[in-house]
Image 1: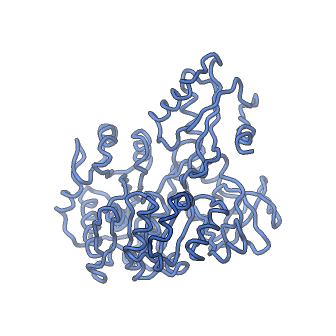
Image 2: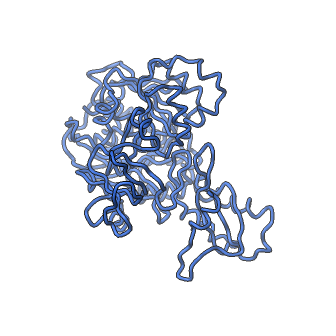
Image 3: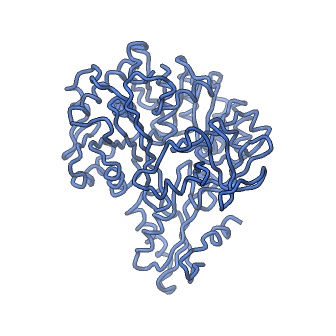
Length: 512
C-alpha cells in the first residue's frame, strides 16, 4: 500500500511528527496533501514521466510533496539544501525539472535562482518570494481527491560523479496504476523494513538525518507505507535523539557512524538519563563504522544494531545484525539480493579472501542508469553484466563482505560522499594555483575531511593568508562540505608527463 493512500485506513493516526516543533501530519492529512499536490502538478501540465525537483530542510511537507510527485508518475529529485545556487541550478536543469519547490528557510538561495530557472514553475513553503509562489496557498485551491490517472513515479536522486558534476541515478518508471503490489515498490523500502527489520503498522521510526538523502527518504517511506509513525528530527543532536526515543517510544531508528561517534563523545551522564527500552532496531549505513565505535554502541544499546551496505543505485543490498557482526567484526554483512563477485582490474573473478572491486549480480543489477551519462553507466558494468558502486573489498569463506577501500578517491565525511575533482577543478582556476590534489584525511568525528595540497604559481606567494584565501574562494563557489579544511603547499606535485596525478602517494603520507 502506498503511503499516500493510507489515510482512509489510519485516519488521524500520526504519520509524521516533527520532533522539534511538535508539528503532526496524520495519515489522512498525508493522503489529502499529497492528493492536492498531485492535482497541482497536473494543473501545471505535468504528465507521467516528467520531472520535478525540491530543496528544503527537514520540513513537515517534505513527504507530502514527494508522494504527490509519485502519485503523478513523475521523476522527483530531492536536492541538498547545503548546495550553492549554481550547483542547485545545474541539478534542476540536468533533471529537466518543470517544477521547483523550496522553503522560506532558503530564501537567499531562492533569490539567486529566481532568474536562472527560466520556464520552471517555482514555489516556496512558508511564504512567497519574488516569482516563487506560496506552495501552501496553491495547493489549498486544489481538491483533496485523487487525480484520475494515478500511476507510479520514481525518485531520481543525485550523487557526485568522478567527473565532478552530480549524476542522477535514474530508474525506469513503470507507470502502473495505483494502488500497487509490494513487489512493484520502487519508491520506498517497504519489503526491507518489514521483512528484515520487523516493521509493522505499530512501529515508531526515528529519522535523525537529512531527508534528501536516499536512505532517510526510502526508509521513512517504507515505514509510512505500513501505517507506522515517523519521528523526524529537524537536525541531529545526541540528547535530542535520546529524548525522542523515550518520549515517542521509538521502536526503530537509522543512523550514520558519525552520529554514533557524537553519542560516545557526549557527556556520559546522558547515557542513563533516558528510557530506551522501546528501542528494538537501530540501523546504520552510509560510511564505514570503526570497530571500536560499533563495539561500544552494542555495549550501550545491546545487540539491536543492524548494518547494511547499499547505494542510491540499489543494485545490491548487503546486511548483518549485531550477532553476525560480533562473529565477523568489520563485515558489512551478506548479500540479500544476489551473488557478490570480487573482480580484478581485468574483471576476472578473484578467490575468497583476495581484495578487488565489489560487483553485484542479480535481478536488480541492471535496473538503473546514470542520467545523461552513458559512459558512467557503462563503466559501472562488468563484462559479465554485474554492476559496481566502485568499492574495493573481499569475501570470507562464509561469504561475508568486508570493504577495504573507498570508491576511487571519494571522501566520506559524516556519511556524505564527496568527490574531489569538483574541488580540484575549481581551485586550479585560481590565478595563484598551478596544480592541486584534493583527497580525504582522517577526522576523528567525521571519518574523513577534505584536504588540499596546492602547487602555487610561485612558491614566493606562499604565506599565512594564502591558504585562507583559497579556502574562502572555495566556500564562495561550492558547497562548504566539499571545501578543504586545510591546505598544504608543495613546489611540485607527483604528476606523470602523461597527465596522471599520483594522488595516492600524497594521500598515503597523511594516512600513514
